[in-house]
Image (cartoon, rainbow, N blue to C red; front, top):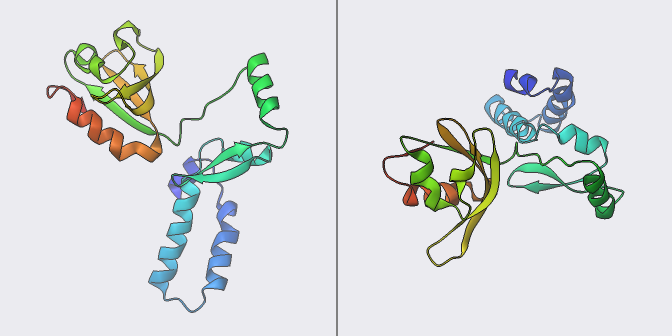
Length: 178
């Protein structure tokens, strides 16, 4: 429960979940009951930090790689587009995958992985780009963040293993992918 509390959940958020599970599955042995409760808690943990805000805005939520994500809001997409053009928008990346590339010459030796020239990025800056295979087809889109001693890659959670495998296969062997 400590991890859930760190994410901003309160014990009261789980009271009804626990009572419902116990009452619904009265005949389960204790190990099966604990497993069922832990699975439900795991579901809660796969909510992004903006989940409550989406619910409060009456967003229609759908499953996306195990995360509850908003797909639309009551006022419609046109209203969202106007709001972003007039003010700003937020893209929540907390459900996405994260990799880090480190090692001597990490910029020059990993630049071939991306369509964009990341050597132009300054530390603290980011670039939305894509990775392409040898035939020019898109492997995936991602965000590359430049740090002083590494680059961080924010990749789609639904392609996490595929992206990791492709990067690992095509990364200079002197660099480390974490």
